[in-house]
Amino acid sequence: MTRVLFVLPETAGSPDNERVLELHRALGAAGLEARTVALGPGGDGGLDSVVPVLAPAPRSFAAVMELRREQRWCDVLACSGRRVATVAALGGSRGRAPVVVMPREDSPAAPAARPRPRGAMLQHAWLDPDRWCELFEAVASPRRQGTS
Image (cartoon, rainbow, N blue to C red; front, side, top):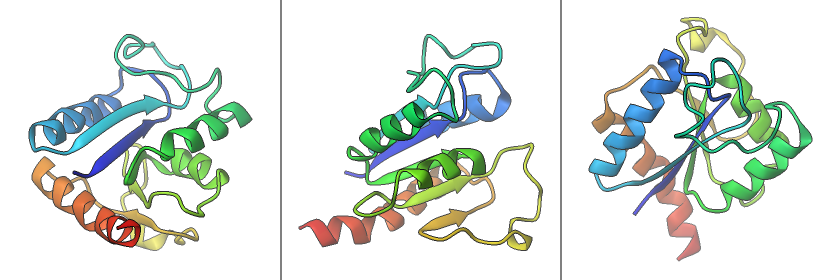
């Protein structure tokens, strides 16, 4: 079973964060194991009761270290936006799960025009839950084969 860790930048009740939570529920219904965390508190705090917060500030050393600890559990790390992916990259990539960068509504529409960061970063347009399941399974497959 593929384990997906969704990482939000903060606990604001924004449409982007709500969309990730909907995907979390859909993956659970599809048989994938999912967990959602936020790097830090923020915004209106609309998701404070639903999403655990890793650190007092999203761009802190504590956030990097806690995210690194959380990554040990997952097969795929799904970052909501490039800022979250940057924090994930600060924790190092050796032996870590591959990272999928999920686009946010406030990000530019042309991901191909942006330079690709080093590592296993992927950028995809927003997909329906079934397509996300397929993507997460495909990304996690080489990692699981290497550990068996």
